[in-house]
Image (cartoon, rainbow, N blue to C red; front, side):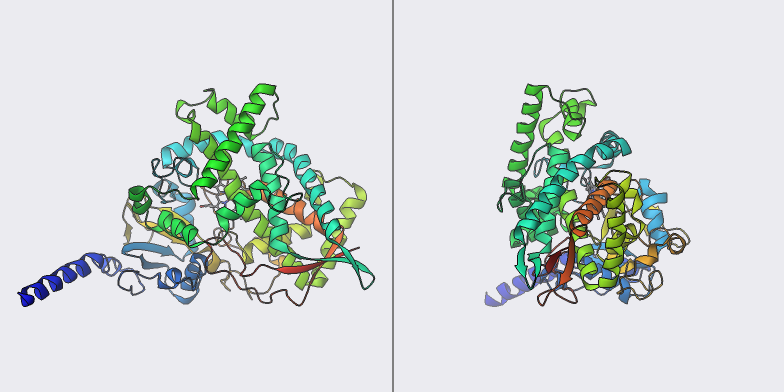
Length: 499
Ligand code: HEM
């Protein structure tokens, strides 16, 4: 009897083992270079134990493997990591119709908001929605947003001045950079996307700032949600849990409908996102866009995709300027010249800071806010000049963090050198070797707004203050292995010295 039970348990374990490793020969059979997987976790043990973030995991894989394409397993599922930039270009741009999906869970019943965002939605809906939203980021619309961004810049300047105290004959403040920048970008996005003043500089615990923290701060719950939505899409589908915490969705829904009702009552128009969404809601556009959460999703995605990415870009730019004082002096000289000619920040004056432009580009190379890109193959695809066929349903990972540190494209990649992006040097960078905003039709829709926000934020800080490293400023930086986006463990402490 005992013996029979033993054989039965052994058989069940064997069958389970066979089932869970059934795909482990997949890349070998296709003749694709692969990294040997481990039972249950595939190749992502370091991710699950929070030793590495997904960005650094893929980046290290890129830098340590000598193959154009690399087969890995996330749990039991085969994923293809692309290293060759020509293949990356084919996937993102040339043969986009084979890869028009990010491959994340987009189950409406699990999360009616996330599933309708551009990033998550399936190709047909995505295409129609993207066409609809693109005009919101036209030059004219962006020009209209500059005064809104300047208002938040004024709030930030007042806040920074209020934090300064007299020390050794100079007014100075010691601050955690990311928090200041997150307040700035939170208020800008809520103003531009929700038409609201979030007042993050007035109240330390302002509601939108709290929601922003809930979206991106590390908790085991957030980590599990992220991993599930990106890598085990069937799990949220079956268990019906949302991408962000449910109260985050609820808050954004309430805030959105409050603004819409106020607008409709007052008849006020601002020619902004809310106006466009009101038109969608009232059926002046395609039918499928009319429904409640579809419109909420569009406002919420701009908040979710815009504030943390831009805040981290401003943070890292200020950090690099603090530890490269000579460069900072030159940047501040350029900025002061612009302000001397015209004290107000205008769309035109933003075009007159070529050195600052290069600093921002180099910041986005060294510190891409979203350090990897993903796609899913939606139609079988033969990789050009190879015999490899990527099958429908295969998830693709693009290790942006590795590419941006590839010495073939960026010699001495750990050195912060804005001159890589001089007019002449830029020509030497192949397409898809520099992809902080992604590339192809699914690229970042808010890239130009993100760049404008970054620039205005930097202008507001640097025109009055010198940024200086202090004894608590981390050098080198330690990226937080628990975060999907690029974040620094423990934050970045910096001194601001008023001129
Ligand atoms: C410096 C700031 C920013 C960075 C570095 C950034 C980066 C990115 C990246 C890497 C992607 C994925 C692109 C791809 O898969 O090819 C993306 C997508 C997206 N971003 Fe941004 N972003 C920034 C700012 C913004 C802003 C300000 C907004 C909106 C207000 C925004 C909205 C979006 C949306 C909606 C998508 C999904 C687009 C789609 O799938 O069609 N982003 N962003």
